[in-house]
Image (cartoon, rainbow, N blue to C red; front, side, top):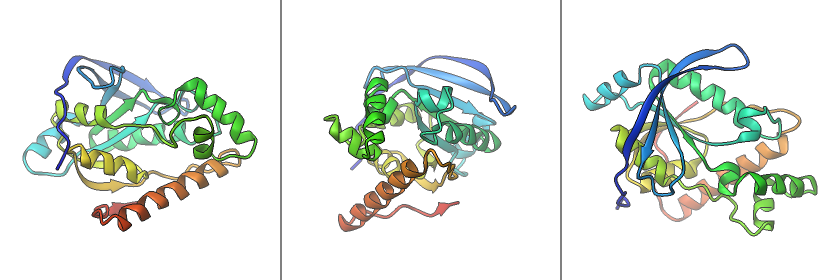
Length: 227
């Protein structure tokens, strides 16, 4: 049975023009919230014809495309090549704007361990650990991200059903447990570079591990996946 969620409300909303370094531009309706369980300043960006997407959903049509994107200061802002977060954010904004939907920008840096700890983990990765092993070596969980606030935001926006733009099966599993109907998981692109090859290999291995564990536990597999 889905977990019961505390009710959140919209605090304010404002239109913000967006511009990316490669020249791509669009406009977002940015929502802030009150009552999110972790008290963090998460944002929802309504992109493209997001209002029309909500209307279509209410009429029984297709679910809007939604990406929960965890904050990555080094990748999103400074263009770090050690991860693929910046390119994933850029891709997600355009793909969602083309169809109408939401990007949830979640303030959980470094898989939930924070910015300084993430940089500490980088130092351990330089010594040979992968990104998950480094978090554990710091006394943290492999991945401490929690999507309860994301589920609250979707409920507040009137989005009970989503097409989830993510290659991470844990996001789909958590959101489903929290009462969000994940109609489809749409995979993100692969942004491979010499600097992030080991990082991406570790992510792919972890995703395969999660999916294998779900099968062994008898949990229902993901619904059809688009590429």
